[in-house]
Image (cartoon, rainbow, N blue to C red):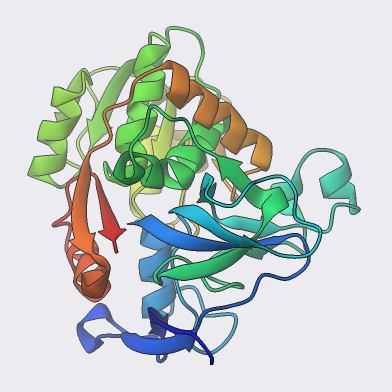
Length: 336
C-alpha cells in the first residue's frame, strides 16, 4: 500500500496575502541511488522560501515543496548510500547537487556550477514530513545544538558566513549589517567573536533590540548613517535602495557584499560618491559544502545564541506571512 504524508506546496505563486502555499497529500518518496529518506525534525523558514512562494524566484517545477534548512533523522538509505546510518541526525541545506566536473566545481567554486540544483526549488524540500536528499550534500550536525537551534544554521548561518568572507572584513575591523533577521543575527555573532565592531541598520525595532542584546555596538534605522566609517558591510535586506546608502557608509577600500538571492532594483549609482576610492560591490551566490563544514565546525566550538520563533508544520503559511511582515524574531522554525 502506498504511504502518504502531508506537505506544503507552491501551486500558484503570488503575493503572500493570496495564500500561495497549499496543503497537499503526497506519497512518501523512495530514496534513489546514494540518497537518504529523511524524516523531518525541524525546518527553518528562509526569505528565499518567501521569494519562491511570491514568484520572485520562479518555481522550477509545479507544486514545489519549499524548505532548505532541514534537520531530520535518516529513515532509510537508497542503493549505494553509506555515509550515514539509519537513525542518524543530519542537516539538509540549499545546495542539493552539482556536476562535479565543470571548471567551477574543479576550482572549488561549486556554488557557481551551472548544473547545480537546490533543495526546495529543484527538489522538494522540508515543508513536509519526509524528503529525500543526496547523501553527499547532507551534513552531520553538532550534538551541542538542539533541532530548533540547528535548523537556521543550514542556510541563514551558512550564507551569512559566506557573505562575511565575501565582505573581506579585516581583523578587528568595523562591520555594518543592513537588515537583521535570521541570517544577520548569526553573522553578527561570528564577526563579534572575531573582535569586530558591528553596527546594525534595520527598520525593525525588535531586531534593533536583539542586535544590542547580542553585543552589537549600535543599532539604528535602515537608512541611518552608522556612527563610524565601515571597513565592510553586508546587505541582508532584499532592498536595492539600501545599496547606495551602504556604499556611502564604507571607508576607503571597503567592500559591500549583497547576501540575498533576490534584490529589488538598485538606483543609479554616483561613481564619485558611491564607488570611487576603491569601494567594492559584490554579490553572494549560494554556498559550498566547504562553507557549511567550516561554519558548522565554528558553531560546535563557539556557542551561538540562535533566536527562533517556533511554528507547527501545519502553520507554515502563517510562518511565511509573519516573515513577510517582519513579525518573526530571529528565525521561524517549523516543527512537526
